[in-house]
Amino acid sequence: MHFLIDPTYNTCMNYTDTIVAAATSVGGAAIGVVRLSGSQAQPILASIMIPHRAGQWRSRHVRYGHIVAQDGSRIDEVLAYWMRLPTTYTGEDVVEISCHGGRVAVELVIARCIEAGARLAHPGEFTMRAYAAGRIDLAQAEAVMDIIQAQTPQALRQAHHQLNGWVGSAVAELRAALLYELAAVIARIDFPDDVSEDALNPTALRAVVARLQTYIDGARAGILLRDGAQVALLGRPNVGKSSLLNAFLRTNRALVSPVAGTTRDTLEESADIHGIPVRFIDTAGIRAQTSDEVERMGIARSRDVAASADLALVLVDSASPINTEDDAVRAARGTAPSILVCTKTDLLADPQTTTQIEQFRQSNEFLAVVAISTKTGTGVDALRELIAQTLQSGGPATDSRITNTRHRDALIRAQQSVADAIAGIDAHLSAELLAIDLQEAVAALGEITGEDATEALLDVVFARFCIGK
Ligand SMILES: Nc1nc2c(ncn2[C@@H]2O[C@H](COP(=O)(O)OP(=O)(O)OP(=O)(O)O)[C@@H](O)[C@H]2O)c(=O)[nH]1
Ligand SMILES: [Mg+2]
Image 1 (spheres, rainbow, N blue to C red):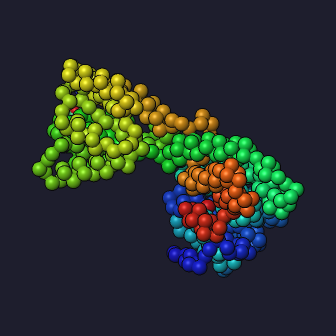
Image 2: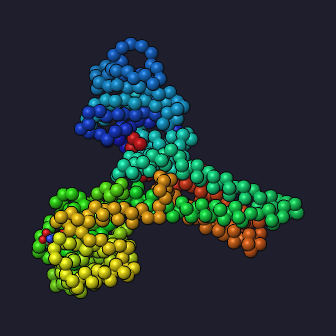
Image 3: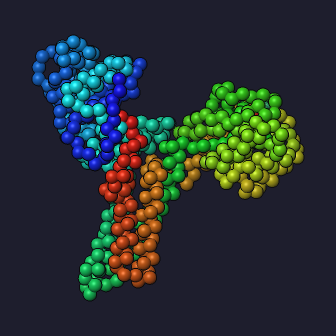
């Protein structure tokens, strides 16, 4: 069964239609929830369901019965309830029908709702309606999606905090401070004789810049928690990269062997590292030179991974001499922050390597130097801890972190505009020019919560959603 999406759909549409979609993922589950929203939600339910007990439909009262076809034949056995507006998710009348979770049952119930007057919802349309009704702001709408896609409990907590509206409150405070200054600037434009230049207050604007900086600084940690981080395992062949990947995952995911060059291609797996969703990338051992074409391709890929990683783990074998291959690895690692991981510490240490590791420890080349043995497990937990600390460094200890690159970019633009306004005040620029800078800052902040969101921006935000959200 296929439901066509209206290609002319855009976020400017009005919301007179009653929409329907599966709120749960379809297929194989005990229960599937079909949700309706709109003025006809309750009449549609009343027209397609025969409740087991006779009686009135009452808001927020669950009823048991059957969804039936037009000829009265039963489609599925359900529990259903209707919630009267306005304190519903969308701010409209909402109906939820819990039917059986099989694909056919859910699709037939949806088809019956459509037959009775509903229209299939567009991706994100329920949340879009919640936003349009003023139930949530744009940052909260995005948090709904983040909750659904959270990869770790900490990421979920962070998304819940955003859904609770801290971003909206923070943005409102900053906007209020800017609007206050903007009012002074506009007063000076309108009444240049009555309002002196001294009425413009760069100190208050500097406080806004500093506050914006705090949020921008914390964003890296917040975004990593939401989107996950990429950590590359780099090292010459046989150094123990795949063994370390397996230790992180606590499974034998990657092939491990004493043969140098066992891993030929990159291998990616995710793990929860102290709440951060980390994607570990095991790579082909990097050699200075090789005549094997496939190995060369693998090494090229390792270099690409190293270049794009958020963090590189550079492995050296503490039981054998450091050689030119190790130098090639260090040269290949790109600009990502890196941790030196000395492997196989259960074996007898190579004295020359021990000296060189000590030199690395003294230099600033690596963020840290850690000794591990995947054979005994020594140091692996400490390394996990260090990875988490490194990825979260600079982030605030609270959940009030910016988690979204869209928000961070808007904060950076707002900060630049405020900085321009401060420079303008210092340079005695005209009030008209200062007003433009401050208006731009206010607008950039408004994009975050949706006050100044354009239709195109809303389309981009809601395009991430799936049908039924
Ligand atoms: N004694 C000891 N041996 C280890 C340790 N870690 C790895 N090894 C051994 O070192 C060899 C190579 O390990 P791998 O994990 O396959 O090394 P790799 O870096 O992935 O190697 P390539 O895929 O060839 O680049 C295997 O025989 C492992 O059993 C360790 O901590 N202690
Ligand atoms: Mg390997």
